[in-house]
Length: 522
Image 1 (tube, rainbow, N blue to C red):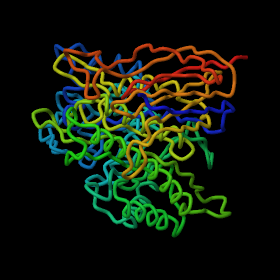
Image 2: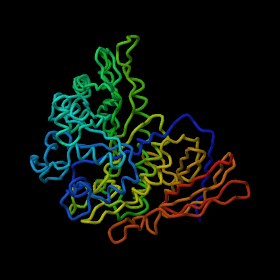
Image 3: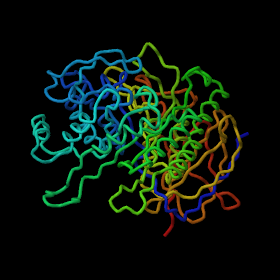
């Protein structure tokens, strides 16, 4: 017998907008993410455009990830941007020890290549600077190289290297995981260091600004290192003490606060990537739901401890967005592959649907998030196998969820059977709905590995169904590979039908994500 659930949607839109940046991505010089993944080189037999794998360019251009974070991650802690500019044949070879990568880094994919990739896929670049082994001067020079339009030596050097126009990079991260490999700082120590870096960050007038005290400048968003979201006590202390330290005197510019959270399965508590039972399925999904509590907690701490500048008209007035700069499942990985390579199954896709809908529901609290990572690492959207490029179920999930970008959140209630309770409460069905251009987009996630769900949908206004798409497969451990590239991909599904009590009835198969579009009648 199928489970039964009830979803009620109020179509009076809230004032909360789903930030497109919640669908951000993250790439790093780690394993096969860039070398052999995104970047194959212009002389490769694999089809490419200026060294960028064409199949990935096509897939990501269609997806249009709103923001892309680079070069790390931990790699950023030892990355020196000058190694990645100029003639590719004359760039130094360095060594990359990041998370078991353990291979030479030829630095062919540097700043210009990253910006080229972003422009081709219509993504806003987020550059993470080197706080551990770099310097304030190195960060300032990198920003000047990227953004200064005027006739400085760095702007001239950028032009010599192929770009006379500035890159106008908005997002700049000041360090990475400073509580661990990024420096093992205390919160107060990082706050002091952040002050220096943020205060030194240059401004870039949009128009010639002679004799103007406060000219209009290029919008810059400086992102501070937030806590390790997987450490309950530490994350509270880090956030409280960081903002308290920042508020001891005048606050430096700060626009974003970068929390990291992984759904750990390193000891195999939830089975392996492709071998798990129903209890292990539930264990992994329930772990993903913990992030909801973390977001609520961290947002409240920021609001409470954010330094206030008072009535000083010249003081910086901080308004900090909570960001989840790294998130996703982390399974025991296949050591025969490149570092942190893992398959992405139906189970991972359902997990990520739950996570994205946490972001959607809390779009008033979290403004940007980046899945770790885009290609060949952890929760990849795409996996490459020689000349083959395979889109994972996770890629297709992000594609279906595009409809929520920039939409208004709707109040949605969901009554469903409890499947599992460990850190959070996993229900048989989870849901989210938003409104854009007169169309209500409804996500229905059947979190049960084995049971279908008969969903009663109550919508408070008349309309008709425009489109119903679904991600599911015959088995919950199914994935896409070179032999079966479309095994888990979007398919049309039956539209809801009217029930006797005037609700809509929809049958959600086990382990599935359905996205339904309902146009409101004029």
